[in-house]
Length: 117
Image 1: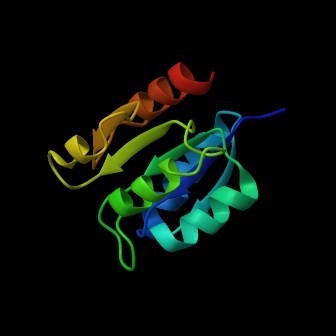
Image 2: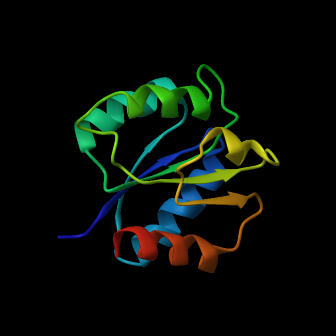
């Protein structure tokens, strides 16, 4: 069974690119465009990993991150930060990695494979 990745980003171009990249490499995907929507998708889909943008409308990635880490059933889900905000990775201390936009697709795959196979 393929591992599932939740892609959270408000930029539809980034979402489409990440979904294509991940699916082309054997992963299932689900997506959300902000932190509020992401919480619903996270609970329904139970992904194996999350890619998370930090700057989004309605609810920023850092706030979503703090909320989901409080849920005992979800808090162990690894998170890969993919953001255009420099140095904001410091607000998500236990992320598996931080990639600045624009990012290298090979680096995304390397971090994902290292975390979930």
